Image (cartoon, rainbow, N blue to C red; front, side, top):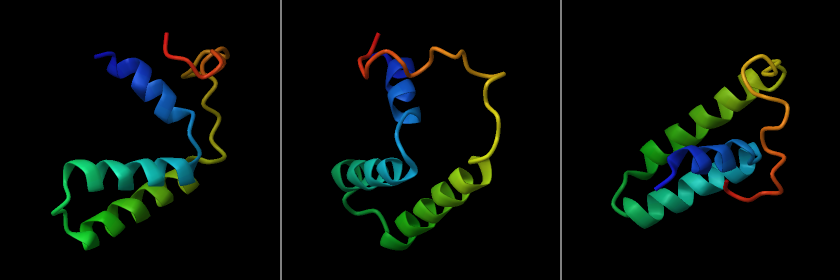
Length: 73
């Protein structure tokens, strides 16, 4: 399994898509998860996304990252 390529794909998602992915994964792999914990996680992800929205990440990621046409390499 190539987790690095999966993480690259996840990083390219919008905050709404990331929240939806978290919900899908929780429903699929932890169906008995506490809904309150799910909401706390969702709010945390939203807060983190908002807090980093205007940050310049260019020094951490190459300019070509995410421009592979949506395919895993």
